[in-house]
Image 1 (cartoon, rainbow, N blue to C red):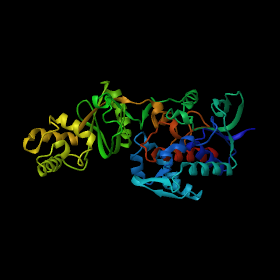
Image 2 (cartoon, helix red, strand yellow):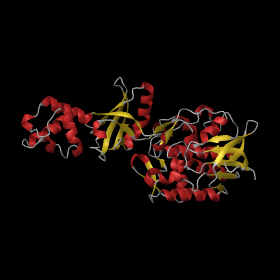
Image 3 (cartoon, rainbow, N blue to C red):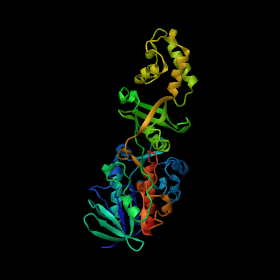
Image 4 (spheres, one colour):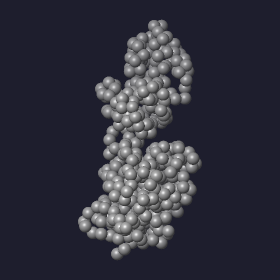
Length: 417
């Protein structure tokens, strides 16, 4: 049987592409290599599914630092607000949380996945599970179908590749689509991990003394070898047995990767600011006053409640201050150094976890070779791309899934029309 459109990949982008194409009247076959649809979608947002972000368009684009500007046309046709309305129309009530993140009121990703799959089925889309694709077929300069690993050949007028990148491979994203794109003449830009935990060889990381310590609302700054600021991100973080993780660290990761590659130094300087909205002088005065109010108490005890308790010995040691020091014996120069370290505690970063352990893949199909309005290949008519296989990546917080949904919708609708 010949189809109008074959969509390869049953994740966020593929499901949305199949939904849009079916709604536009096309005869659609959705092919998924695994036994289940929407696996990555089902674990997104900590299992709650952050379906989009409510920020205004320009601000939204700024939170997709990996070629977000490419999405202007797609978001004009199907915006983050359209995505929210789409799910509301499916009966999924949404709520807005901090920083514009949109979640289902059920707080369950399964609610979103089930509704999206139901919508796809209601549009008459045929679904083949457990059907890994071996290759995309091209004939006389046009996409014309797929060949499954089983040997079966399925013909279609158009093919949409929505198989994701190489991150979170247990959900089926193993990088299958890059070879199919290259066969059509496409360039794959260098792949690298983004939104990934950072690795450090610092002694206080290696001895695990800070492992599990969570910090809220801190600032992390990435520096280049000439001590010029690359980027600063505020948010929560956590010390791990190998380095640091948490939202602030994840957002810094792509810049760490690029600095490591650019300079080849083997390490990237990062500083931790425990009070991003306080000046160093303010911290100096506040901590001095705390010690002054209880002059007989050891400074390590004075600072409890002001600083994370497990960080105090390390901060005092690096400042040249003894833990048992009392107010009358505090050297002002070292106390000034303590205030400086509270604002800029250095952490040398040696790398990141692997691309398989990243939340998002950086790099992918070169965007210069894709029409930003339709998601169709400029090199192979009838071939479309959507989602993480393209060289687009954003921060966590609903930005990547927004990119997946808008490119999926545009690919599906334009392939059908």
